[in-house]
Length: 407
Image (tube, rainbow, N blue to C red; front, side, top):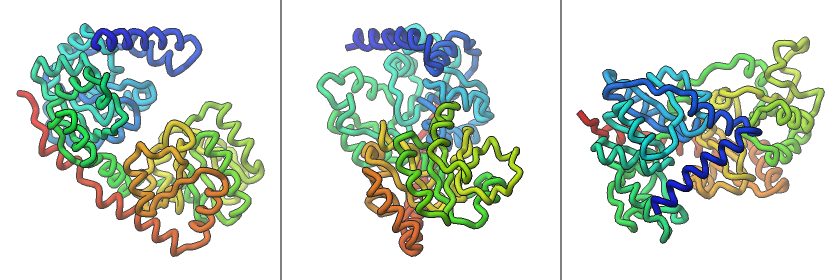
């Protein structure tokens, strides 16, 4: 199985090289690893994240560790360019790198160079050679906010190598009891139910949101529908609401913002009532005159939700929904497409009636119709979202009580 794993790693790298000739993300993935120079550290604490979402999820633990162990340098690695490019200059780390390819040599050299006293991974990302090197050198390895489902490779007949990886983890901090019990069926007993650190992150963000005066001007005391991390399939449904609710303002935050994708979205929206965020400075008319805004930059979404009454979370008609908790933390009822089963928080919100899943235009119109016209119903769903986030915070504190650094 290890032979197949090594072959798969090298095959992935080969495919990425080919893709880098015509794909910007693949090019960044390849060139970023080729060009980086890993600095020597002494007794660092190593945090690894798959991408930006996992960084935000693990950020409360990163901040807590940095505060509690100020004498240790922090090294952060990312697998994905989307995480690295946005957080490569984070003040929370002394160095940020792409994770070198998971080979025995790379793992040994990287760990020797940064000399970690502990490694902390968030949610996903299980790399055999890195885990093996940490285990051999008796360096504590923690996985925080982990969640497991029966369909994962760990629980398949051919998942022996991945099960072996789990035995090399010092402590698994899992999101729920189902994960802990599932792990026990494969004799993995080093799991502690701590909850999801994303609740801590979004709760803190909602207490101290960044003020956006330009959005306040656009809102102008009108109710706002925020469509976050949307994809074309989401947008084609949502545009049907704009004419139907002229008293509402709509903010679209596309998941991807290349010019062609933004222009495509703009073409779906009423031209005389829609403004791009990047065009606001050139306006000669009051911003409050516009009904719809398209955010064509990265980094505003988590602060935008404070101005909303209802949120739609994109991705549910594709690979899976994006972050529902950022909106829920501000007390917004959240709507999303049908592909949400992998996300425990979304399943819980649906059960509690703070979240609503749709399959088509008719369901979208029915659900938004009630939320937009029935204030009591919307406020009830809003309270569900607020209470849900508040009730589930605290994972970071529990994790910190159970982390021990190697001397």
